[in-house]
Length: 235
Image (cartoon, rainbow, N blue to C red):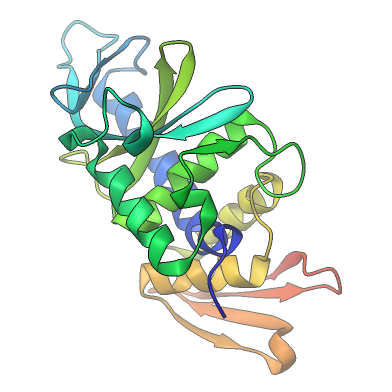
């Protein structure tokens, strides 16, 4: 069976949300309380987070443009004339190649309408979904959203000095709730398994896939799924 866009998003989601939160916490610490200003230079392929405290250095992060999103549509960087074929659109082109190999139209059509219902409804959620799937496909650790010419730029980042958090039972408990309320999760079973695989965690399915147990360095967590597929944690 071929993959779908929703499959890739579910596979990516929990890892993406964990890294997203950790990256913002890292930027908050590096800039002394958060960055009120951000500069983007697509020619240099970098985004700069300016410090709030004068004694802190600015944080310059390598960036690749995946797509831009408006209220109505998303356009892949590989399809935007001023970026197509340039190094800044390399990761976007890699996502297109993945879509070609898996026959996923979302990644291969130049423009995509912003969903109004179902998975990732609305422009902000859809931008997050493109960032999450982009990280999954390209291996980039985190994504960032910021304004660009009246649209939202979806950037894939590779920040030096940032390390994804070590998976823990306590962190996972909150992560499940974040995934459930994000509006991005369609198949919770796939999302939990995708997280375990991405983090290299041992896991075991219960009978008829009604539950899954994840084993962390310290402790374990069991997730059960109700008749609607909604996840529930058993500590």
